[in-house]
Length: 224
Length: 201
Image (cartoon, rainbow over all chains, first blue to last red; front, side, top):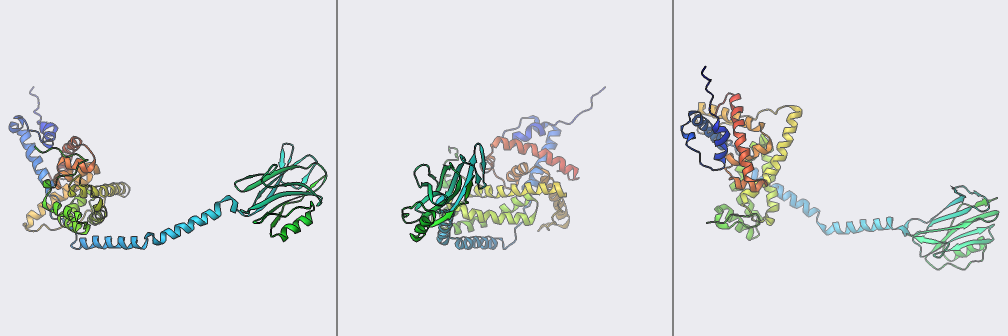
């Protein structure tokens, strides 16, 4: 039985790459009819690809459109030029600074009562419980935490020294509620030095207000 | 013998065609407007034709062509002269075309093929010739669109734009031998596609 003759595919499998690589082809390709036919076919294909779209032209006014876009971009950039961006950025940064610097957060006083291992935010306590105070001073130059018992006894007064501690504009302290009575925590803050104390809640508060200080009263804690 | 041009070197002006030298001289005078005008005059149509084959859509091709020159204008003052302006310009167009071609491919997958663009008359040929050429060109364009964008890119730059493999390698960042293999493998695909379309080359 005579095997069916198959077409030679060496042009596709070898010669196409050799041609793209700029290599010479061997003699087979100039004598093999299949390869000659394939070569003619690929030459036409290359020709078709080379002339593809040769009559295609962009619209006549395309260059004007390019210049118009360039002008538009220049104008947009001019409008966004840095002469006003800089002041605006500066103002934004200043605003952020005012908002975020810890000392400038609004003044306030918060308390917690620690009874053993339990912490609660109520105002009822028992002797031996720990009263924790945390205050933000609004960036004031002078500030103090105080706790008065029964309005007439100063059981805590501190600023930067223990039992107070100041961190990132936050003033904290703690005091043991060692006896029954009413405990009044307060925060006093001012740009000026704070006046001396008389260990009396009303008198000290009056003196502070008279001296231009501000007073923030915390919740009164009753120890029974 | 000329030494090979490496990426880090400036191209010697003597090897550049006249319009490029004129454009570079304009850049030396700090006149990107003049340089751009030369580039648009010399390469405007070529960039459009390249984009047209890459994205298969006239309006999109025109949009990309225009944005290529706008982007070129903005980048001209920083042109590093490591390639010809033509290669550099096609590098810009190529990025935009590949992005658009990928988008078109995704859109076709999702929504089916786009409508064929209307055929334009071919000037200076008989009606019969025009018809035959239009059919062949139409079939070839259709087959090109079936190739993956990066393969189509190499084929179009090689044949339609007549760029050398080192030039294509420079603007695509790929190696010339890789591109040669890519093109050699694409040609049989195109041939078979044309046969399927009843347009044996």
